[in-house]
Image: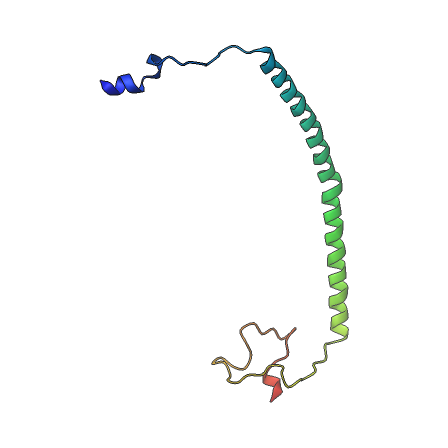
Length: 117
């Protein structure tokens, strides 16, 4: 019974709550609507810039990067890398239990420690 009295808000009179709008609130609503209208126009502009400028620029840059990579890769096939065997390259105090090369060894980009012998 006590919980009904404490938690029924319709029994408690709300002081200071107004259900009608004043002229200050109407000017605020008008200003908010003006900002929304301006934001919608600006958002449309940025959406068009994204679709018609940014995305084609990214596609063009990607195609250019791929063409440069393909050209470089073709050049590397004709001129293989010559390895300079410095004494500090592939220095191992103790071999790994799977061999001389590390787990990250790539024969196309790294000098093999097996060839040092």
